[in-house]
View 1 (tube, rainbow, N blue to C red):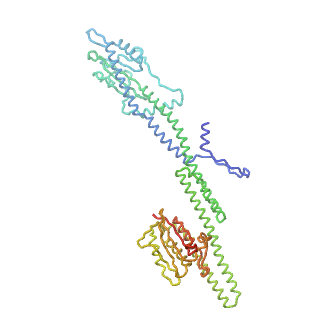
View 2 (cartoon, rainbow, N blue to C red; view 1 turned 90 degrees about the horizontal axis):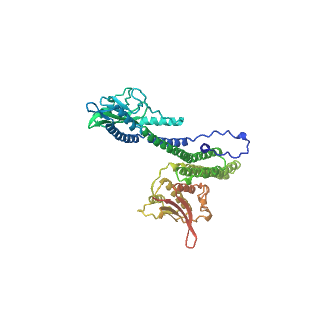
View 3 (cartoon, helix red, strand yellow; view 1 turned 90 degrees about the vertical axis):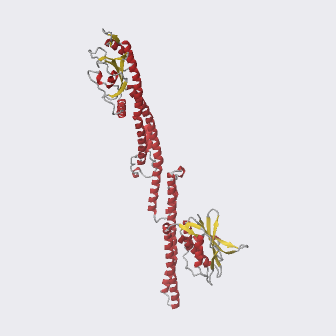
Length: 566
């Protein structure tokens, strides 16, 4: 049940929606596969856990401490055994000298080792073996007791024990000497027995060829400081191995539970990362295919809205930020495509008007024989051609504006200096209005922006104000700092104002509301639209309003550009 649930968690795929077509239209579903990102996350987590558990299973220092403790106990035991033998197995010979009795020594050694698994041997001062706790009969009988190797009786347990034995070999120090086992044992083949003959109690650790360690301790059997023999006790590291194995079993149990939790958390983490990324990738792919398939058709911008990308902003992490960025990018792309479609429609409409007029004039000129009328028709044709040339030039500049704005570098712009320089360019004209400014020479108002583009905005606004301003009137250009870090660029004229219902429409492309005295077609209607586009690219705002006097009568218009200072 657990593995089936885990498999469904790993390989779960969305259910195919109901389809009115016959089943043959459905492609065969490809078998699910593990996400590469999920595999990497699981591999990293499991590898780190395995390294940690492997280092814990080594237990080298823990084994050294257990060996030292066991040797201390063995040292104390061999002293007690030597003292007991010296008291109970020493007899007098014919010359009234103390000697060891082999029979008494064997009986006493068997009594001493009944309650322990310690191998005890007794040598005389001539290195001859007198007693051995593993020899059940006399030495001539050669009947010895041997410890059989342990087995768990289960293949898995045997493999685990084999793995533990390998870890023991790795943990065992390589400088331990090999146990010198000989068929005829002599005391002089053991260094600790030699030391015991000199009255020194010592210990030693040997490596056993079959694997494992053998701990030993030797002490002299003394009677009134006379060394009568040497006792050597050896004990396998069974208790140490058992203690280490128990610790390793506990570690493996914890490892098993931790591994299961790690795998589940890795799957959760991978799904929390991989699944949203896969959804975002599919959404981006669908947007791309939708865009390429719908180019040139109406409704493209409606298809590419931000709702096409899943919203993961509630996650408050990098994936949420990516989702927000993709949604904003899709929304901006939809607006750009919509603007391009509208721009293409507006261009077609604006070009069609002079072309229609030009065609009509050309057709009429071929039918008219009056020179005066032909002259007027030719003037109409020239005006339409000039209008087309001006319109195409303005359209070309407007279409390149977005790309140029992205290429231009943002720099520090002093608006006060820029306004004073612009006002100085417009010389006084007896027939036209006068451009003035109230910005002091010492004033400094700084923003971050593209200075040539901001100059273009102010030139469009000043030129627009001059075209509506009465002769000898004033066009005032000023800079006003506001609270909150904003700066307003203001252009005011004394013209007839703007119709209230056209205050926003004047910023539309190709919208033209010109003075009656001005010749038709001299403006393309893109100046204010381009100005709005530049200001919005600077994260600013532009709008128009009418100026009124105390009686509420319109006395002119005012254009305001609001930017953010730093």
